[in-house]
Length: 365
Image (spheres, rainbow, N blue to C red):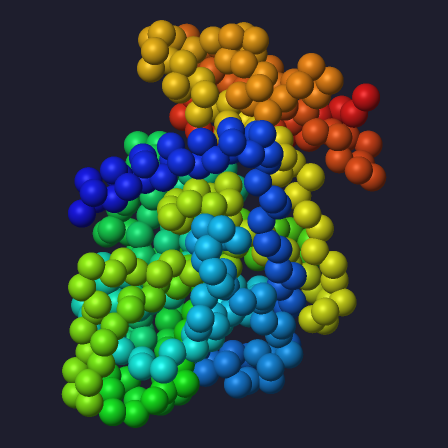
């Protein structure tokens, strides 16, 4: 299965690069953003989103197809809302579904073989060392850790667990009964802040007002046929992939396309989401990383020459601020400086030859 998945991801990567070029190297739109308010009052993780704290939280915009506007909008609504306190990040999801069903009951099963809800979190926004949680309507859960994305040579660690994770679901109807019509199901998840970190690193901590986290949510929906007493997947029909922040291709493992959750201590609706001023620089550096690796495949080495790589391929012109590529014993470190509005300091965004992104603050001009 993993082999087949990697083949699909390689194909998807090719088409993303081709589409990027066909669009005149247009940088993909800024991912979606959500302002997450601090919870007022306790939350019981029972799958229901009816507590006063949840009722005060704001739902996200409905999910869209994973490829974005290139595909029709989903015919069933999915949306999420989030809260936080000093101990947990809370995620609540509402999934419209006329026939709620699930079959998998064993922890760490491949949950997307059922209809499911999925969470992807990159704690430090470096495109690496991120984790995924999948849940079906029976609250069966699969959590896994990825040191790197599949297309960068990574592989999932299924044995990894989110310490202290709480998961519950609630069905508005009757699960696995097909002679009636359901309304849908909800998911409620609490992730301890101490677990929002990579294995072996120091425990995570609660956010500060204004902090942001890279995150995305996905829903897998299988098309089915039902009778009064049975349900089967339609043969030859692939699953639908609906997401909060579109990926551009059928591949959730592109952390640079995940959305942003911004934490706030203000009441819901009073804080404004602030877009990431480094988004364009990040995307251009990822494009440079892809082209550098294509160049190495042909020449068995990297190059520091942007002219050799081609400014057009990078979506750059001579008038743009250009990245710099430093070669380091068979590896490279490329970076691009970004002027941050309202700040006396600029931000330098780096990408390494293994695809890891980091940022640092530098003196402004």
